Amino acid sequence: MKKNNKVKSLESLSRIVSGLKRQKRTVVFTNGCFDILHYGHAKYLEDSRKLGDFLVVGLNSDSSVRVVKKDKNRPINSQHDRASVLAALSSVDYIIIFNELTPLKLIGKLKPDILVKGGDWNKEDVVGKDIVESYGGRVQIIPYLKGYSTTNIIKSIIKNSCGKNRK
Image (cartoon, rainbow, N blue to C red):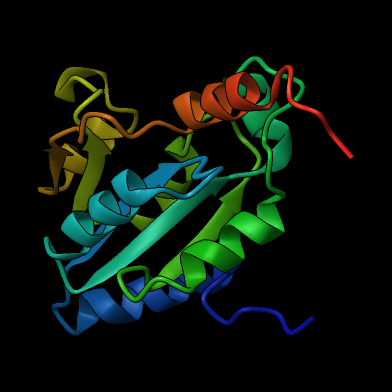
């Protein structure tokens, strides 16, 4: 399978972001698991991208998802598959997969102009807030779109499949 050209290493992405900043382009960064991509994710990423010229998505690796979600059955989709689905979105310019539990290292290295998180976060609790604000960047919270949740999708699938005859 062909490797997606939106998925970058930290070294490569750091060079790209530095070049974009020299061109006075605004770089937006967000992160997450994006396990079962749904409309809430798509809208969030579109809204994030509208804040700047380029959107970089930090994607939790499979091993970090298991720790962050505290669930050995997650992620449902592999990091390769999740990155491929994200890469198919026009709102996403670059993706970087990270193994750490937080994107702090990425934020420190990339120094995005705008750090975005969803409305389920308090601005004060956003990982990397202090770093971004230290060089004049800002943190933006995008309102949470109610009714869209990967966890609820999984629960619904389980509920709807229990007791049904399987072939």
